[in-house]
Length: 131
Figure 1 (cartoon, rainbow, N blue to C red):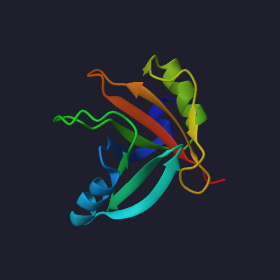
Figure 2: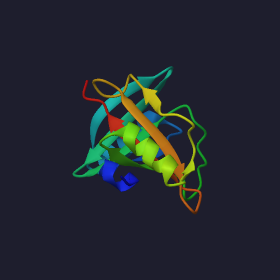
Figure 3: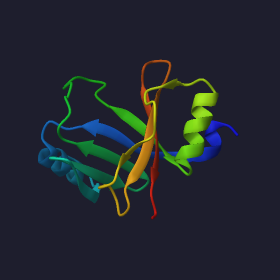
């Protein structure tokens, strides 16, 4: 099976935030709704949703404050284990040696991994766990 067999489309776009409260207020002013606010250690992460577009924005990581500041885009993964194996087998430039997890996101956590595209863009494959 190929990597594309394990994702359904865009899940979210990740943008680090210098001031999370101001970032949330900015996107709310644009019409986005807060779909989730989660803690990741001492930092917070917000998911802002407008129709089929979701932006993940978080505090605690360096922010470039320059054009092109998007950190990653994430594909909605249906089976992260199989996707990870397919990505390795197909020779993609793997960022992670193993699948990562954040148990505090959504109801049951997430599992994900990242690859690099030809322009050094980070592409995340993320599965929101349902149990």
